[in-house]
Length: 190
Image (cartoon, one colour):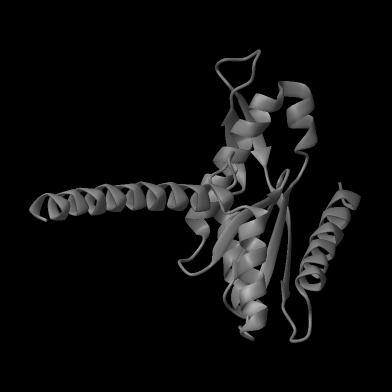
């Protein structure tokens, strides 16, 4: 009986260790599932999850969409490593402007999205912080120039507030349309 008791304790100890290992692996997998691998920001899946939660709970929020202007020539002229380098730098600066409680993520390509937990009118200071902090000169490394290339970088920005009754697709489409309207109008003045 004593031996069975000791064996049972060993088995319980081994099972606890296995459970702990599986819990750590699960936490790691969940972290990867919601993170953009290039920038370390939230990925599209995580952003959609937050928007859905806000909608389900009737939480006031607005969406800010950003699209880096003239990004394609960076990849075309200097290579994808230079483009990736720029995206990482841009995202780090963008992260520094984002308040705790808001969620910043990479929507795809050179588009970023921020879910601000406030009304649109309260979101405009965020846009000003982005313009003052994130827009400007970046030094990116290229395959051909190991010293780097200086680029002037800015983005088109659109902001919209969610209206009760709108779906995720509708509010994101409005933010995207708002951003692209600003992109088109800024190009027409150049």
